[in-house]
Each structure stands twice: as structure tokens, then as C-alpha cells.
Amino acid sequence: MKNLISIKDLSIEEIEKIFSLANEIKKKPHKFSRYLKGKSFALIFHKPSLRTRVSFETGIFQLGAKAVYLEEEIGFSKREPVKDIARVLSRYVDGVIIRTFSHQLLLDFAKYSTAAVINALTDSFHPCQVLSDLWTIREKKGELRKVKIAYVGDGNNVCNSLIYGCLKTKANLRIATPAGYEPRISIPAQNLEIRIMNDPEEAVKDADIIYTDVWTSMGEEGREDRKEIFQNFQVSKRLVNYAKPDCLIMHCLPAHRGEEITDEVIEGRNSIVFEQAENRLYVQKAILISLDIL
Ligand code: CP
Ligand code: NVA
Image (cartoon, rainbow, N blue to C red; front, side, top):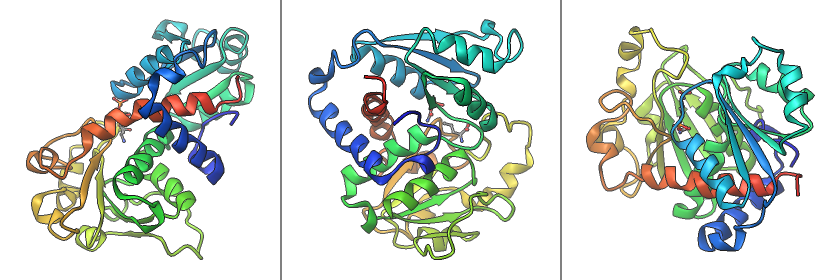
């Protein structure tokens, strides 16, 4: 795999390889401790991050490689153009991990980079998150094509990546968003496994997994009316009761308790949000090992 820009670009074989590597890494982390010895990775983050940054930095260290976190002062597209930064960094490091606003900017960077480029979240996609989440779902529930996932909330970057992830792995996905907040990914007409609707109760009916994310993503702040628009889309005990009794609750975090999810549900016994966060480490190590840089 040259880059990880979107799950859309991955073959099912590449996804399976990441999943099986992640299984092995979780079981025998020490086996991989020198796997990327001598390699280095630059991290460029234009939005805050706890999980993605720390799991990448730690994962890189655990694979024997070096992470270089680049602060704001590199002046991405201000001090010098993106295409120059990409060509310079490519001469020093083996991979660049980028979290930014515009997905186009990431594509522009990748066009000029000979180092591998990993999308650590853009306004459009969050592929590392969703690969890890699908791996978590498989770990908990078995074969993805037999699993019913309900995503409730905003049709955002996580939701977009979930669509591509479910298209590839053939998991059943129902998405409930308020009208006007649907994801803007076109789903092939022949695909019957993915449905987008505006009724959260219908979406979660008999679900094995309920997944939610913030109503306001990073960069979209300042719209107080969202709380009112999304109020019927809160993952509450009442909503969870429409799902299967053993339905698991997922959230990519950070969570806004009292908005997209209640405290009772996120702290409840069916919630796997912290294991979900932990698994980012294993799957991202598997992603790094899958890059064509060895
Ligand atoms: N879920 C996730 O990507 O978290 P961070 O924004 O903290 O990296
Ligand atoms: N949709 C959220 C995900 C955070 C990990 C955001 O973009 O802010």
C-alpha cells in the first residue's frame, strides 16, 4: 500500500492484511519491535488530537521507528507551499501522517510526496479510525457481512469512512441523520446493505452495533442550532432499547455527554468506547507495516 488516503482506495485484500497483522500485533507486540527500525515518520496536525497523535507516536516508537511531530511554525502553505514541503519531507522521512481540514490539501500533498502519506483525519474522511473500528467490530461480533451497524448522528468524516468501510467489507450499515445532514457519498444503486434515513429508531432496530460521533466536528464550531436540529438523534437508553439486547455502543471519541450520547449509555455495560480507542494502536501499527516502505 503506497498511501492511506481513503478506505475507498483499498482492496479487500489490503484491508484483510491490515486486520490480520493487527491480530498478530495485539497478541505478540514484541515480535514487531524492530520491524520499522531506521524508518522515520513526520506528523503534521492542524486540528487537536489525543488518540490519533498518541497512538501513532507510540506505535511508531514500538515498531522501532522515529516520529517527528511538526509544530505549527513550519507554516504549512504559509511559509512555503504544500508541494515544496511534500518534496522536502520526502527526502528525509519514510512517511507523513497528516490531520488537516481540506481533503484536497491532503491529496495535493500526496501528489508531490514520494514518502507514504497517511490521512489522520480530514473534513471528509477518517480512515484510520474506521479501519480500527471495523476490526474491533469483527473482534467482538465475528464476520462483518453478518453484522448490522447503525450510525446515528451527523453525516460527517467518520460516517463517510464508515460507508466505504462497509461497502468494502459488506457489513450492513443503516445511517440516521437529520434531514440535510446526510453523508454526501454516492452509494452504488445495486447496493442494498447501506441505507440512509432520517429515523433513528428505524436505523437502530435489531442493530448489533450503535455508533455515534459528535454533532459538531472540528472546524464546524459556532452553530448552536445544531443541538436543536440533532436532539432526536441522541443515543440514549430509550433509543438503545430498539436494538438487539447485546448491541454494543461505539463512539470514536471525544464524546459530548448529554449531546450525541447520554452519560448512562457511554458508561453502560454495552459500551466498548475505551477498547475501541485502545485498538487504534494495533490497527495503526498494522497500517504502518503495510506501507510499501520496507
Ligand atoms: N477519535 C480520534 O481520532 O480522536 P482524536 O481526535 O483525539 O485523535
Ligand atoms: N467527526 C469528528 C471526529 C473526531 C475524531 C471531528 O472531525 O471532529
